[in-house]
Amino acid sequence: MDDAELNAIRAARLAELQKNAAGGGSSSTGSNSASGATGGAGANADAILARVLDTAARERLSRVRMVRPDRAQSVEQYILKLYSMGQINRKLVEKDIVEILDGISRDSSQQQTTKITYNRKHIAVDDDEDDDDDFFD
Image (cartoon, rainbow, N blue to C red):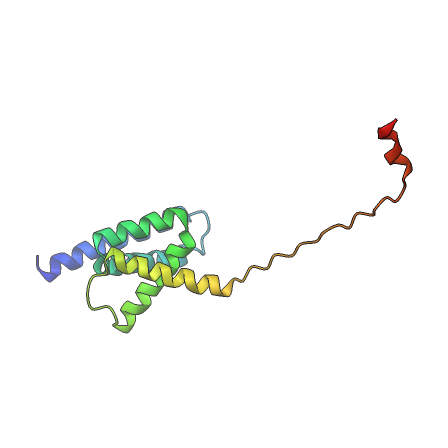
């Protein structure tokens, strides 16, 4: 394929994505351009992740997204940040994703310290001897 064909395919795909994004918010007039812009950024991020991640790594990330969408999003942001800085020089495999997840979970667990406080009720001791005698009659 030459560059002209690739550019035509990219333009068609971008138009399709913008049409889909605009179709979801067509009831409001001001949000069409904003949703198209975020849809384009999401497509760009997806393209970068597809280029950087191995098949097994993408599957692992999608499984994480089912359970913890916030954690998967933070992993994606971390990978995109590394890519933008030029730190990624090979495809990331599943082991790399697991290491990133471990690092993120360690960071979040250090930030969230759980403190358990017990509030115990003090029961007044009944000193009446009368009630004890009822059992021995």
